[in-house]
Image 1 (tube, rainbow, N blue to C red):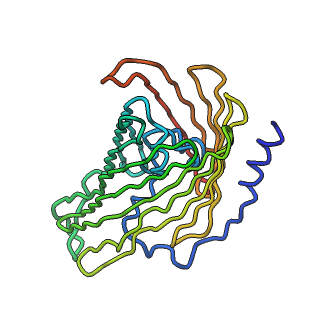
Image 2: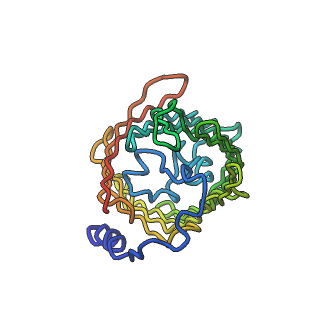
Image 3: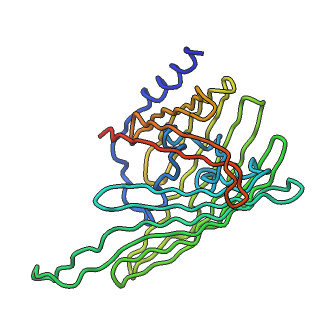
Length: 287
């Protein structure tokens, strides 16, 4: 088992850092690339083949098909930098007869008001800026193959400028064995987003991942992902549950290494949803 764990992280460490891609910066709606969920981030973002909670709305909508018993409410707050923060609310509702599950996700990115200046450098009125999307998701349940998709309604604004667009995600999850799962997703499919005369493509991204349950307490995962404005990236992660109510996580990706996290889970009858989880993650920038 130790050899397996070491191999996962050596693979991540040896992945090539190719520098800045020649197409970097060409895409709009960059807020779509902000990772969601302390658990997934604590595992280095290697979550496309796990995706067994409401954050699957972001990582791989097919994963919602694994939530067939209880409704799930998911609340996330993330502090970024320079007084910028984001919130995510996710709700998963399993359908009757285990046909699948429907999901609703709301993402909000906000910041403090920005001081405005005219062309002479004199201060003028402050203005606001923010991004958001609303996602509607569905996944079909199955013994081995799960298929899901999302439609996302995007909105960006800064001062009096506003832009809207629509994006789509599709995903699959294949349970090869009880301990081995493969996942794949194509994210942010759409025409682009336009501010006045400035238009940018959406950050189209393809992801393929594998999840391996070594034993009931230990999960290993790895993702390969490729965005249209970046090189191929490799993420690896693990989750270890030493106690029934405690999980420890460690992950690696090429944007932030030594991602760490922990989580607590407890049963509490809240809004008829009996499973309560709390997670927290630290991300260290490798640059």
